[in-house]
Image (cartoon, rainbow, N blue to C red; front, side, top):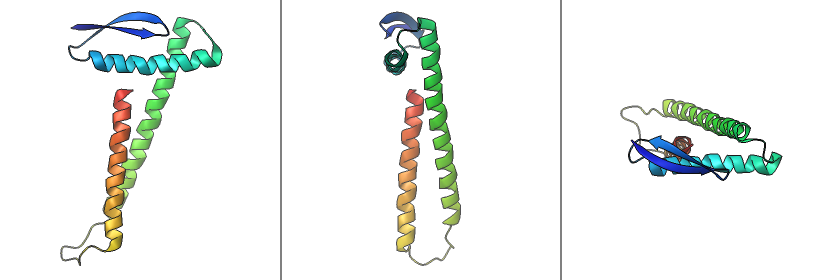
Amino acid sequence: MAKVSITINHQSYDIACEDGQEPHILTLAGVVDAKVGELVGAIGQAGEARLLAMAGLLVADDVAVAQSEIAALQSRLEAVAMQSTTPPQAAPPSLDEDRLANLLDALAARIETIAETVERA
């Protein structure tokens, strides 16, 4: 078990984590610290526990929004994929099918980006 020291709102915390996870924990702490910083800028120092609870809610909201976006994109991707089935002896792809393939690639890239954001949060 490894230990990493994080700082949130100028307060240090020693956190235990799995070996090798230290950089990831520091990144996550940076996200929480940024949320707390936004809150302090908006409402001032409202007590450590309250700020951490509010920051946790903001991060949870970010995750919920990202998960909703992923679900919507996956649904769109599935709908497009179902509409684009081609018969076994179909003619060569048309320009519309090429555009559809490009759209699917773009949607897949967006889903991956959102998933990475969720994993980092």
